[in-house]
Length: 212
Image 1 (cartoon, one colour):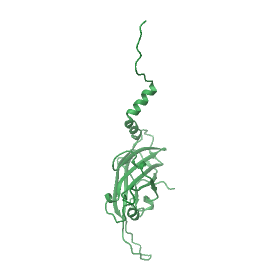
Image 2 (image 1 turned 90 degrees about the vertical axis):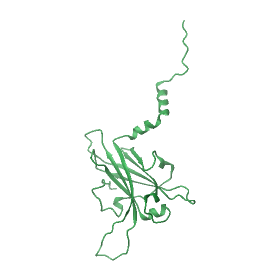
Image 3 (image 1 turned 90 degrees about the horizontal axis):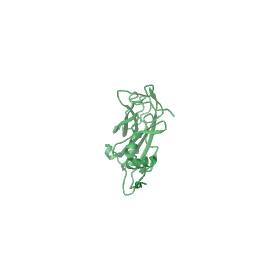
């Protein structure tokens, strides 16, 4: 009789898959986000409110103030040629402000979202959406002063796109990963275009927002 010495290690198929998942987590996770949606660029900029002349009403003295525009460029290239338009595409914003101080050691994370409809597939130029920070919001969460640069207002901006109930794309100005989960979110301060002073401008430049 021939005696065969047992191998010191034996892996079942399930154990081998678990080992691979533990040793190589990042490529597997990133593959889930490498979908038909791609966020190309996040563009924060300081802009001033438009001046509108209203000649039939009372004169109310005011001057244009600084707002922050947070523009996102993205693409949708579905694998199926039968898909022409996408509805209920949710764009989530995570805006980390520059308000860290001795009294407030942790900066404030402002969150907001817009839901887009009728997104066309496979266009030659990126699609765009936008949200805004008002002059007063920038004052409150970045030191109480007037600001004229994005660096004096922001620490970071993250954006995710959700479609059919799951996150399909993400991007940050600085770094990668879901860094916003380390902060307590504060909602209600980010303003959609239709609720901003810029509502009547650039109507054909940005994608349509679903009315609530």
